[in-house]
Amino acid sequence: MSKRRPLVKGLEAIVGKERVVHHPEDLLVYEYDGSIDRAMPQAVVLPDSTGEVSRVLALAYREGVAVVGRGSGTGLSGGAVASEGGLQVALTRMNRILEVDVENRLAVVEPGVINLRLDQRARRSGLRYAPDPSSQKACTLGGNVAENAGGPHCLAYGVTSNHVLGMEVVLEDGAVTWLGGMERDSHGYDLRGLFVGSEGTFGLATKIVTRLLPTPPAAKTYLAAFSDMRSACDAVSAVIAGGMVPAALEMVDALTIRAVQKVAHAGLPEEAGAALLVELEGEAEELEETGLEVEAILTGAGAFNLRWAESEEERERLWSARKGALGALGALAPNYYLVDGVVPRTRLTEALERVSEIGHRYDLPIANVFHAGDGNLHPCVLFDERKPGAVERVMEAGGDILKVCVELGGALSGEHGIGLEKKAYMPLVFTGEDMEMMKTVRGAFAPLGRLNPGKGFPGGPAGHHNLQRGAVMAAGPGAYV
Ligand SMILES: Cc1cc2nc3c(=O)[nH]c(=O)nc-3n(C[C@H](O)[C@H](O)[C@H](O)COP(=O)(O)OP(=O)(O)OC[C@H]3O[C@@H](n4cnc5c(N)ncnc54)[C@H](O)[C@@H]3O)c2cc1C
Image (tube, rainbow, N blue to C red; front, side, top):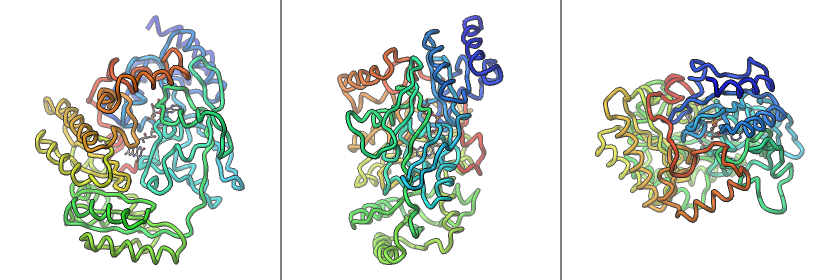
């Protein structure tokens, strides 16, 4: 406590007593995110403005304290977990939408703005914010930028990096700078591009300029049932090979369907081995034509019970089933570990078969709910942390799944980042030289490496695994996050 006191006093002088959390029982809620890791920070501060963030970081710099940024804590790779202790800077109070510029189709927001809130605000002006993580009701734009978040509609529109024009950033020593700006074109090095996906290790974003797109004139959302995953995967490849890029192409397996139906009765086909949600967007006439082609391809691949949402309400119900799927899995097991790997789309079937083998080998049920169009797998390993050895088995199974993704020519992360969770696996993909190069880039932004230390590269302490239920489980099975 004595080492903590000068830091706490300094923080209180900047933001006031009520916005500094330092009693261990209060810090409990900040020791986890949506992943399986946990660790307690020394203190948490909740700044209200860029000026406060700057003064807080300058103080931490002088005191030699590590800093971890935090949005809503829905991250699934342990990014917001203070694995080396230090100060957590929670940006949730900075939640103002500062500007929606309809003419230039952009918005300026603070980092604590919730993703869905920005989209809803944009839609009131006939625009939209396209990247829509399934956690969009809860996650922040700051967290999205740090993780380069994806989502169901990123298949057609691109991930966060494609929608962020610039950021105001506070660096390790408290200096404030801008990367990118309000324009679509920039000259010189693309520092904005480097920052997006840097997982809080380069600086803290305090303002974000996002692109907004016009809302599509019409949308058509299909639900197709398949007898097994293989035919559903073949359908995904056939749709893309047919030259179509649906706005979204999402898959759930039989276990997930069962869980969703248990809690949401969303009309998913309970007898199916897999279901695909396919969304088309565009002009109504064009949709009719493309829709017929998609129907033919899906049916050709073995789809049964093919139907489409007849109303906006039904469409919303289908999306809510998909986006609430992880929460629904809470009905099947008290804990989950969600793995995030990528494989080439053409190897989806093989990857899923091997995931299933891994489940059998470790005697663990694995549900699959994922962005099939991107080849972005999300095997969700279900377990009960109270069973001796369960957590160790789950972690090993997760590691084996990531190895399969890499073997099949894929990547370690589709959208959740490396964080604590996957850092040990970086050498599967990168050489020592590659990683040194990345550290050199990090050093250009944060020379002392005190921003979110211990993340992204092998080594350093991990958080304490397990013993937490994950953000969704804690929120309850009905949670739509
Ligand atoms: C049910 C569920 C579904 C999900 N679905 C998706 C999905 O479809 N697609 C997807 O991409 N992700 C998904 N996620 C993961 C998660 O929601 C995203 O990674 C999201 O971007 C994290 O946002 P957050 O505000 O919760 O950030 P946090 O978890 O609080 O932090 C994540 C990282 O961002 C850093 N950070 C936070 N704010 C800032 C800032 N202002 N400046 C710099 N660094 C910062 C933190 O240090 C940390 O490293 C899902 C999670 C859950 C629980």
